[in-house]
Amino acid sequence: MSTNYAEAGTVRAPGRGIVFPNPFTLGTYRVFQRNKDVFLKLWKTELWPPVVEALLSLFAFGFGLGVYIAQVNGQSYIQFIAAGLIFSSVLFTASFECMFGTFIRMQQEKVFDAIIATPVSIEEVVSGEIFFAAVRATFNGTCVIVVMAVLQLIPSWWVILVPPVALLAGFMLASIAVVVTSLVSSFTSFNYYITLGVIPMQLFSSVFFPASQLPENVRWVAFLSPLYPAVDLGRALYTGNIHAGLLLNVVWILGLTVFFYLLAVNLMRRRLIK
Image 1: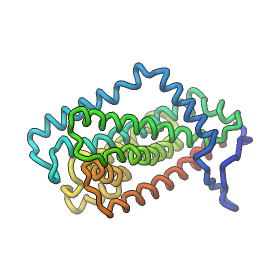
Image 2 (image 1 turned 180 degrees about the vertical axis):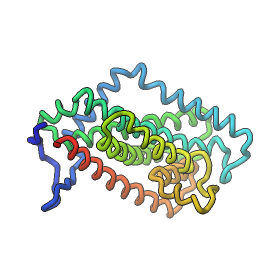
Image 3 (image 1 turned 30 degrees about the vertical axis):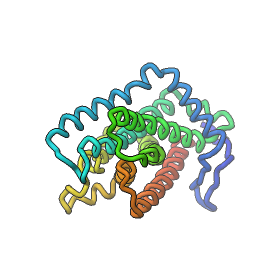
């Protein structure tokens, strides 16, 4: 593949091959727009599953398992799990979109090759992929909020700030998925990340139960999970339990987002210009 691609909006560290891209460019938006247009053409099969999934999860866990659980941290179990399911949906949507979706566009459909032949750079292609996955993940997570609103189970107006948190978390998780995609050679290799990354993040990030209930010697697994600070922040907003300590969650999420985004862009760039 030719390495003669656009350099607009990209900064390189002196003497190194590391790039520091600007994710807010017209090229990034065009890649996002391309993915969005394809998604909307398939709306009959793409738009309704998140709502149905949210309903099934809430009824199965909230009204099913919730019957046997009185309260969790002073709230009903269905309200506790609702915030967790928002970010569980974000996790799976962002991860799968930037694993299977990105891999197909890159390896099988050769969409990346076609785009990079235009003035759009590799960095913009990767940024557009991540942005699209983050927005799609936010939409799916917001579906859970809508379902909870219909059921009149939202305790605080602070919930309107949950989608921006979901967008940031989606961007972070999509970046992690792109890192994985840049390293694998086939679909089967994704099983490692799904089994050792995605599933543990869902199970041990306070989605279904408070992380504080874990034994002390394994509690660090939850606190090191990239998903945990997002779930913790989102649940605080969902319930209206706002306090200064949440700023640490914001800083931690921002730091992880920047780190994994830069790693994703540089690893994918290295793969595409081999």
